Image 1: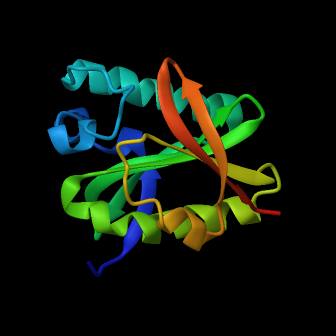
Image 2: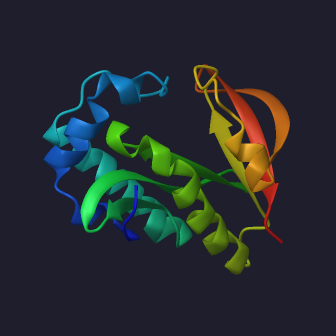
Length: 157
């Protein structure tokens, strides 16, 4: 898929659009911690929570836009001392994950606060080849909020 990918704040996207995205069962399949029901009010609270990360940490999640059209969200969230990078794309943009991840990793490399990035992937994700291609190494399995994930780490400094 060709086009310009830009990063914007989640607050620039209509909550109803994010709610529709997060209600798609193809998205939910790979998100074991996803709340079961998404509506506009849940999306508003979600956006507010992600904006609090920006205020607290000076960094957070973005909305991803392809030629100005919302295609998903993701970015960095501080988990203890680690910066976790996550991507949640709309199904029609699933093939753009590696391209977006590379852009986000370039951002991390340029940011002195981020000596490395972690990735948490649920076991439902069968294709994990992209992470080693990015330079990430497998750390092991972790449990987060009762769900199992495969953890990877990528050095950025």
